[in-house]
Amino acid sequence: MAESKKNRSASAGRVLRKAVGTVATGVVGVVVVRAAERGETGSLPRRLAVGATKLGIRGTRRAEVGVEKARLAAGDVRAQAYADLGEQVPPPADRSGGHDHQH
Image 1 (cartoon, rainbow, N blue to C red):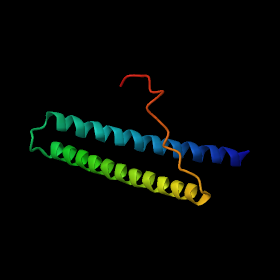
Image 2: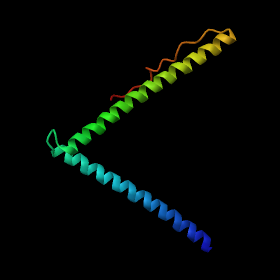
Image 3: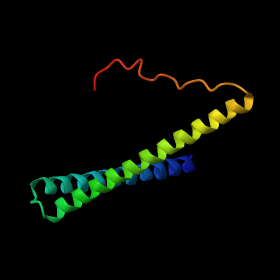
Image 4: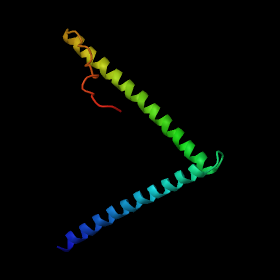
């Protein structure tokens, strides 16, 4: 019984530490964004926010390129498999249908 209480306390402590870390990260983020909003164009918080945003955009673009390369490579493997079976590769599925809501 004492051992299960220790395990529960340890688990609760880990969860609490993670929660505190998450809250602290959020607070720091809000402070930086607020400082950037009221800062002048050349202020440090604004430059940091712009720099972080640029990194995010670049990272997203690189990820998109990687995903597209992986998709094309998978298509090539699929086409080769069909060719090895002596079958014609079916056309890609039409994904435009079934998207009936507005963005």
